[in-house]
Image (cartoon, rainbow, N blue to C red; front, top):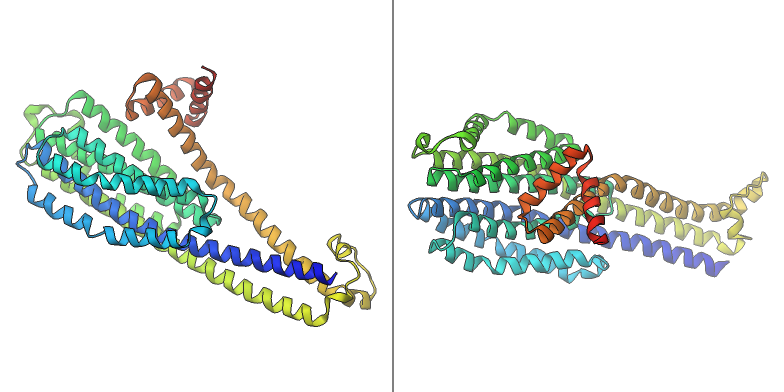
Length: 419
């Protein structure tokens, strides 16, 4: 039995080391998510300024846009360093190919930014085309955050990442609303297609912010409530209603900048909530790392004590695993070390079972989002719809059939596979 007990020790140590390596890599991934968050915020501002330039036919915000390019570029070294840290420790993320694919696509998308900027500066794009191009770039970065939430192995970390992803997704939709509205106000008109796009963006934001509220901690929710009560909200809501209802004749010159300022204040406030989640994420990961290190130390101490007591005295490890008890005091001492090893194995198994159960709910939401995204892509492919139109069709079908959106999405995918 001595050899078997040595193997138990080896595997327990291996499990502990593997958990620690995974947590350390998760910390690196968490830092990458934070860098992406900051990069996205500046890219979203660049997109809004670009639409002011294009919507005003070059009369607005050219100098501000040039300055913003420099701010975005200044964040690249941090992003590259975060990716380098992940790559150098890639062994801890083996089996998560989708994350690496998302990172590769995000880098590829960023390479297209220089050409996009040139087209904006030369005014060879329409505001909607520029909005779409920037939004695709932002989505490629958000996909990295999504995959990070999908691979986290801790319930609390997963909840924070799910809350963060949905808040960032809602903020991205708010950024699209800012850019679309800026183009409309700068051009002093909102055609029916633009107004329909704004309405859809508003609905999608509310869904994301609702999911964020379900998963966020109390601290983040308190900051969220403070943001909802902020003074700028009145101006923002007034201008939003104006964008959805006003005629060309009622558009004033200053509306475009007023709209952009109110939306920017709103997005900056959302960013502060995002930063609360970022702090909570890093703190929780660090606590988990410290706990894992402490557990490894305790495990080594216990194993060393067991080694000194002599594993050869254990008559049958299988007997202890089956919980056969002996009332004799000497027998109890005889099996003490065996039960200690059993306790280690059982504690680890119990903890993994608990993690699995707790992760189920959080990952369920991620799975539903994947199903809905797949259904949207199928509708876009087979019916030649835009992404907003595909989502709008799914939502209308869900309302007409009185079903959940994910159930309708599953039906669409089933019919596609059948056809």
